[in-house]
Length: 95
Image (cartoon, rainbow, N blue to C red; front, side, top):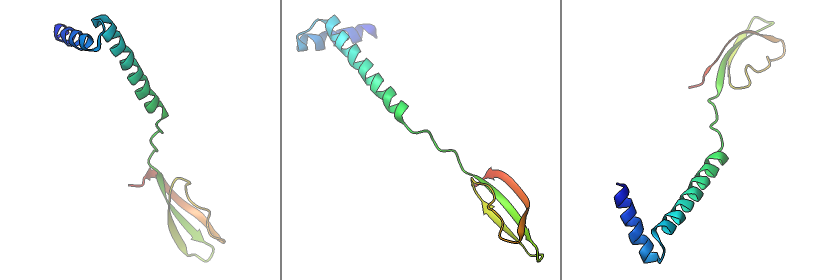
């Protein structure tokens, strides 16, 4: 395998007017530059956003009526005037 790479490098180097060692040096430097560019792209990539969490919220009002709400990331919303949060389940997956 190394012999085949060496022969290919020698052939390419002679076509470019360089020694095999010089050609492999240029090739190695280019590989380092390409790897650095790939690392830069990966480092600049934005992190994946986590799935939102959902909550089931139940409210009871002063007149005895009830209502429920399906909330997400912020949790359960504030109750309507005259009502209070009576139960909450979650967080759990929204999907």
